Length: 191
Length: 191
Image (cartoon, helix red, strand yellow):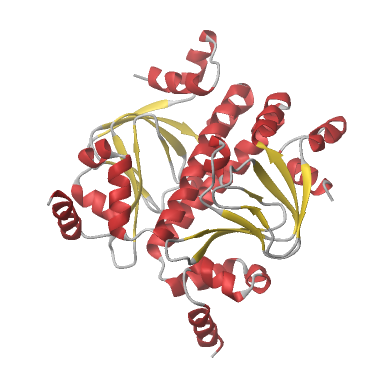
C-alpha cells in the first residue's frame, strides 16, 4: 500500500529504486476508522498526511458550534493545516476520516530533512504546493463569484464520483448550505 | 532595484555571489503606470511576477460586469494566475497596477529551467508556494467563517499599512461590499 506514495512521486520526479526504502522510513502509516479524528482544534499540527486509501475532510467549528467543511482529500492527495504545520503551532481545524482511511504521516522536521537529503523531494513538494495553491486561488474566485447553487453544479460537473462518495450532510457543510437545501437542488436538477 | 529579488531569495536559501547575474538574466523588468494591466482575461498567462516596488491587484469581472478583487501583492510578493500559468492557457483574471509599479517577470519555461539549473530555486519556490498555499487555506476559512464586517476588521488589524495604501473602492471590491458600506463600517469603528 505505501507504494502508492512512490507511484505518486514518480509522476513528478525520478525515484531511483535504491531510494525507495529510505523514503518510506520517513513516514509512518496511520489507519483511521470512519469519523476518527487525525487532528483536533487546539492540537499542534505535527504532520502532513498523504491519503493511501479512503477520504479525509478538514473542518472548523464556528462560534455558534456549526461545522464547516473546507476541504476533502481522497487517494493521492495531501492534507494538513499548512499554516499550523509550518509554524508547528495549534491548529484552528479538525481533520477527520469520512470513511475507513489509511494515510502516511510525515512530521515537519522529517519533511524538511527529506527535502534536504533527496533534492527530488524539493521538486516534488514544489510541484505539489504549486498545484494546490493554483487550485486554492481558483477556489477563492468561485467563493466570490458563484451562488451556492452554482457552486454545487460546478462541483457536481467536475467531481461526479466524489459527489456519490461523500455523505450528503458533509457535502452540504462544504458547500455552505443545509442538507435540506442540497436535497432541494438535487430534486430540481432531476426534474 | 532587482537586488530586492536577490535579498528575498537569501532569506530562504544560499545564493552564491557568482550566481546572482545568472539568476537575473532569467527575469525581465516591467514598469507599469497606475491602472495599467499586466494580464487581461483571455490572454495566455505567460509569466510569474515579483513586485520590486508598488502594488498589484488581481481581479475578475463577473457576468454582471462587476469587478471583484481577489488578491493584492506589494513589495516582495509574487503574483500570477497560477492555474493559467502552469497550464499556459488563457486566464480568467486581470492583473493591474494599483499605483506605479515595477516588477520582475519570469516566463513559465524560464522558471522551470532556473529550478533545474539551480537547485536552491526548487527550494525557494517550494517554500514560497508552501507559504502561499497555507495563507490561501486560511483565507478560505475566513470566507466561510467571517461576516463582511469581521473580514474588514480582521484585515485592518493584520495589515494596517495596507489599508492606508489601497484606495477605498478597491478595498471594498476585495472585501466584497460597496464603497458606501465600507465607509459606514469605518465611521462605526471611529465612533
